Length: 340
Image (cartoon, rainbow, N blue to C red; front, side):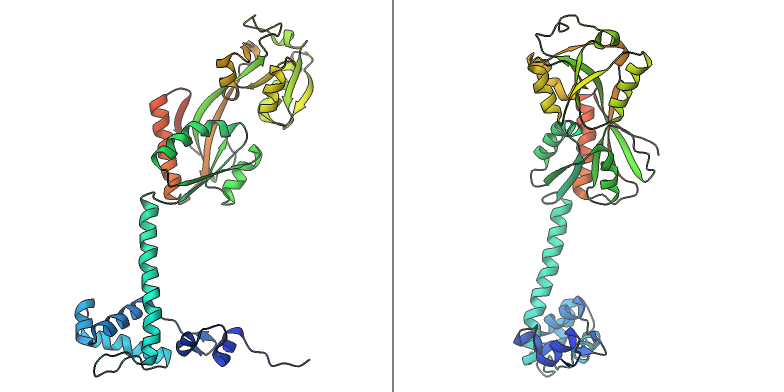
């Protein structure tokens, strides 16, 4: 079937489709492009139309009358319409149509400016973070402090595998990530914010619960409940047992730290977990921790963001709150920007 090829913009000019009746009067398509109108031209036009005088409009805009006349003449030439009656500054029919749209556009500029002021004053905005199941626990107290000071900022924490968090930051999916290792990527800035430690936990009724301290050799006789996601810390534990030629009986692997804790509370074996994840259970006595001198391992948590990135007002405020929280609460919280 044959047809004549018409560009969408040209079709609007030819048929009026895509614009309402008023808009079609001022829309023009010339030489393959839409004629542009800048806000200064519209502001000048509105001033003349409202003042009904070129001289009064010039005074209002702090411009000369010839400069105002030149702006209006250029706008009329671009649109191909006479917009104002020169004798009284009264809008023509085309001018009345444009005046309605000009007011809308200038009001949008005003609204946009007000929105940016709100953003800078943290009356609106969004904070996008990435963390895994473990590092998210670090965020809870600092997010509590952040939300108390900035209740209008929406916070979204995206759950991500630790190995993917730096990539999510680099791809602009989130502004800040929380990781338990220092990323190798030189394009990522890391800030040390928390120092955690590995603890061996078990139920209060376990045979080792009251001994206080055990050796790796003794743990070789125990059943371990482990996380099924590999991590650098898990690999260190495996290597520690292997160097001593002691069996590591990881007979149960579960998909979450919460599941591990509950399973061990039921009396099923022991688990090696970050202290941050079991602070509540150790305080309440539903789990017991014993010291393992050969497994004294620190976990340092870091905030990461893109090097040289123009962080949002919300992200900058979050970093300020994190630093203030570290100063107020001290160890294990800290705030140390690491040199790249």
